[in-house]
Amino acid sequence: MSANGCTACPRECGKSRVGEELGFCQAPNEFVIARIARHAWEEPCISGKDGSGTVFFSGCNLRCVYCQNRVISHTAKGEILTPDELEAQMLRLQEEGAHNINLVTPSHYALQLRPLLAHIKPRLHIPIVYNCGGYEKTETLRTLDGLVDIYLPDIKYFDGHRAQLYSAAPHYFPTAVAALREMLRQVGRCEYDTDGMMTRGVIVRHLVLPGGRQDSIALLQALEKEFGSQAFPLSLMSQYTPEFATDCPFPELHRRVTSFEYDAVCKEAQRLGFDGYVQERESASSVFTPDFFEKTF
Image (cartoon, rainbow, N blue to C red; front, side, top):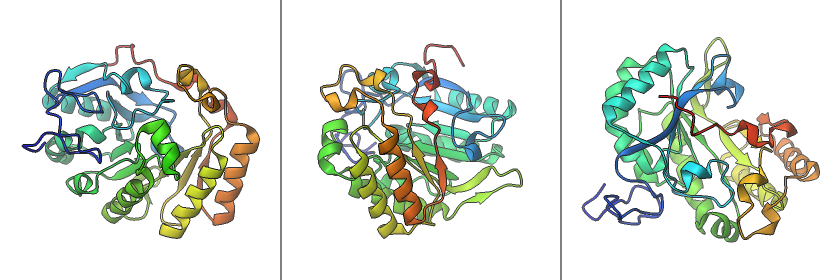
């Protein structure tokens, strides 16, 4: 936080995040947490058999119109925790057998997380995962160098017009590419333990949207041109769920992704030489969205 207000994310809104003066993310300076629990539905090398230790931060610097977590991302509902309380919950997850500490939607808390992670990291023997929407400020990411073991960005759009319509972020793709370059600089290529669990590296996620086949293919081509196909595993997601977009003004988002759309993107990823993960079509269901009103901490 600077003297001119919050400039942690690419929006640099300058809001104090005190009282009623909230920025785009709708979050105050204090940690607002919606859920802390082990989660079984991440990539296999993240969730494993015992679950990923997810910490869901409320608020978001993208607030996508179709967000499946919109109940917490659009309004920052949750419980305020002090840094000490949050550290205690992370240590609890480790004691319960979580494979990692998975910080979900942490971008607007990155600067507050830095001293916390520096303090707790010597007591953790599991990796720290930074699970974000890809809309990151490179200078902010640099403050996390040495504190994050695994970056898990969802690179959402290639076309700036779509990014503006759905996330009010017209410069999304060049911003995400710069952030991804910094993530790779920090953690390098993927490393795994003897059980196949990731201990270090980057996984790039991409959610295929209805009507977005051509944009997804253009995005994959641009990523391959910029980084090659072997710099990171690619996780292609088909889990788009229209139940969370029924009140958005874009009718194209009021349906699921078709098999044709998703298969076309998967085939292009294969043609480009990407390795990684694809989702079963059954993942496009609201049953996989956590219950954020269940008490977990």
